[in-house]
Image 1 (cartoon, rainbow, N blue to C red):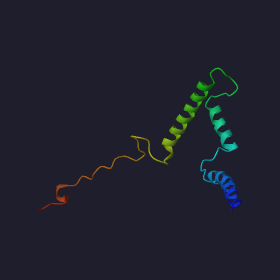
Image 2 (image 1 turned 180 degrees about the horizontal axis):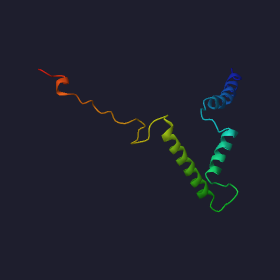
Image 3 (image 1 turned 120 degrees about the vertical axis):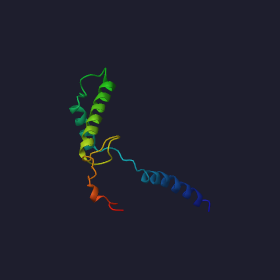
Image 4 (image 1 turned 90 degrees about the horizontal axis):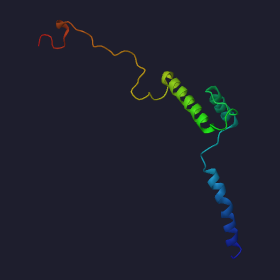
Length: 108
């Protein structure tokens, strides 16, 4: 009985990290995703080897430009929720003009 308690404690200590790792739903970025993001930033004007003095400001400005480009492209794609106050529908439907003798309650 005395040997059973330490064995259970050791087994529980080994099982808890495995269970917590298995429940982790957040995954890191893949190498390809990081490279694609870096290419997007470079196309937006960010040069990672140019200026170390203004590093955070340059990176944040490039990220803002990438975000603006994605939002602009998203507004014309037709997918997802529409932006606030906008819609991609056609012209408003005008009700048909009916002659007096075509009215619903004509003659009543």
